[in-house]
Length: 399
Image (cartoon, rainbow, N blue to C red; front, side, top):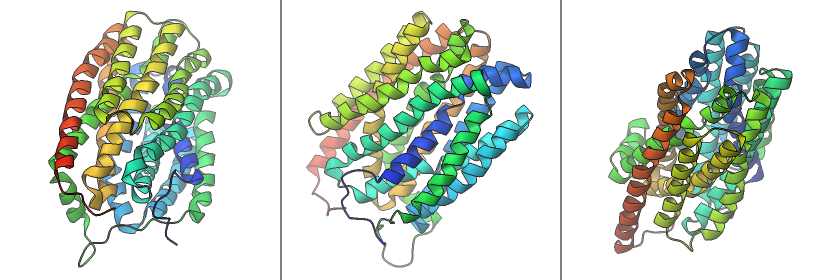
């Protein structure tokens, strides 16, 4: 059964799966200190549980993209969720850091299929004119998962056990995999002749210079945003705040993302995309600058709120751009986009580990604030140029 040609919003099952994937990805941030203490390892070592997850999440994206282009969006998501459920359960049982990191790598690789493939599903089934609105709906579901993870992850780790925070999304992933069996597959663009192979899809994407630019922007955004944000909770714990409370401080990120994604949905089509990008990048810069000056519950909560807003405005604009640059290989394009995003976050979180271990959080967050300036300028200017070029070209046939 094929999906409708023009949905107005993501299917409920897809939104729930995005919620679970986001919960699993962000639950570890407020638990890093507790994991380090429980397993008797340095904080800089326990960071590998997060950076390894992000790296696997990112590096497997091209694989998921090609598989979804060849075999179907829903089929790929369901298979990945089943393996992610098993990896999450194993994560909850691991007695040593090395084994835990290995299990988290597998979980990251599999949960990594959910949101990017969901974005591709939206790209397949929602008309371009209203696509950013639909994507912000999907982002809103992921944001609620983030808010729940950052709030509950630290609380579960501090009050119960950090292993529970890995077991809960594993059980939910299994339920989602079963529920998605009723989700219809979208019709995908067909090419003349034989079905394209992996090299054909990859060649389509990597041969498009605008796609390469969007990937570079995603890498930088991931390094700044996802690479530095996990250290907000550890910065609070370094200042003497308990893990259960520190997680609540960054819950504002998910809540801000959810609330402001609604604003972005309303502004989409009313404000030019470069303006949305500028507003988002400015929020990232101001947020990290604030917490680089002083770390306490108030500044971290305000920063987390600003980061949620920055992600709503800037990231939704970038990912909408990514859905349009190579529509004939959209799954592969989104996969490379997500890969760049999370490889950037993994590299940055690994590089920032020693700074966090030494308690040099002002420098860590100051670097993120400074880096947000060129990111915002380049993203806005190049998106404006892209829009002008597209307007000058003959209009393509509807997708």
